[in-house]
Image (cartoon, rainbow, N blue to C red; front, side, top):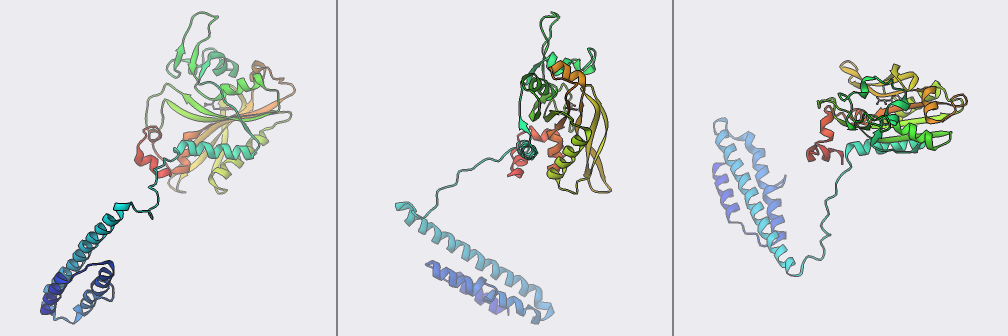
Amino acid sequence: MLDDIVALKKEISTYTVTNLEELETFRLEFLSRNGRVQSMFKNLGSVPKEDRAAVGKGMNEVKQLAQKRFDEAKTVLENSVSQTKSALGDLTLTAPSTPIGSLHPLTKTMDEMKQIFYRLGFTISDGPEVEDDFHNFTALNFPPNHPARDEQDTFFVRKSDDPNMMDLVLRTHTSPVQIRLMENTKPPIRSIMPGRVYRNEAVSPKSYFLFHQVEALYVDENVSVADLKETLITFVKLMYGSDVKYRLRPGFFPFTEPSLEMDIWWGSEKDGKWLEILGSGMVDPNVFDAAGVDSKKYTGFAWGMGVERIAILKYGIDDIRTFYENDIRFLEQFN
Ligand code: DAH
């Protein structure tokens, strides 16, 4: 057996391959499943026990040798083919592909949200990211000393003691767009307002000083809490599938009464937790009054959804900072 191995090694080392057909013949003879090397392996069982280690080792060497000879011959042949072709340029080649980027997971999530609400009859509106105090706080029924008005929570762009000059802030939520929409549009209104918001918060896996919300406002005669619930439940089922586990619980916001918050179950049945994805409620009559909508005639619902939260649940991301670090290895996963 050992002699056979030595002979085969010799044969392989001296075998000449000058074209692709011969290369294929070589492959069939030595490397294929029914080839000579493989059939030697099949006989290993009949080799006496004490020789088996040496024979096995020899066979492996033969196998590696055949593979090496094959790879070398292949490289040589391919190079010569491409050299011939490159004299003219290879006219059969397809054009080199241009690398294309991928959509950011937040953009993808936002797009999906917009599509769902479009189906539910919502238009899209937007407003400025630098807001005045009136739209960001006062018109939304925040009392004058509410903690959100504090520099600890809010980035101020301009702070003024002059009562004729309003403070300017980076909007802390998308709710001020509701006010702008009502100032400019007569009901019925059914619109979503996606955008960036800013909060003066320490950066951690759970919070960042910038994030995204999708606000919504629906104003008409006889809009009820049942409409709000129905819309929210429809949304989470379209976003996460009809078996999504959700809960609605009472909340508090100055601009809605009553207010509701919605949580989605994150993780496995046993080992998961509730993650809050939105605040919502029935528009407070004070807000209608501040925005010039007849609060006797109209009712409405509103919500503010956290887009990062929605994306975290959709894609199983556990650190909010990964959204903003632009690490290609993270972003590539969303092709
Ligand atoms: N603006 C709230 C926030 O940023 C979220 C919110 C709650 C928006 C209730 C609403 C609403 O429109 O009705 O936390």
